[in-house]
Length: 196
Image (cartoon, rainbow, N blue to C red; front, side, top):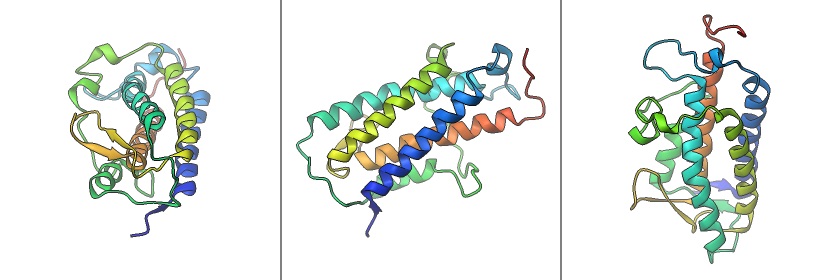
């Protein structure tokens, strides 16, 4: 299996991340509290909760990405990156369909679910998201000097399971993109409040 061209993969993940920054900067920064906290029905997440959920993942993964990249001895960059079966299953489950639709729904782990763990919800979630994603672009730049297959990342829900760096990056970035689409869907809801 040939896998992905490493340069193209990093370029694609950088583009998705930049698109997420652009969208949130243009569409969410100026939203009122009534808009950020609006939910279409009981039990669904509002914009503040969605971004706080993503920020809680960033807090875990970005630190790990930076530590593993800094400490690795695998500095020989390979032209192609090949996913592991587990890694491919992880990021594929997050990737949006061709029509930007969510193909499979998942329950967020309790500690990352803003309805169960309200301590992760921050009123500064919008700006934090933008800053975290700018940091992610810097991390993607750092990955250009290491082997995406040999560097391993512990996943957030297990101390034992590790993903290849390339797979972990795809998982995190497709997960971000999936939830930004969720925000777009929320904002296009006919009952989404106009500015207060």
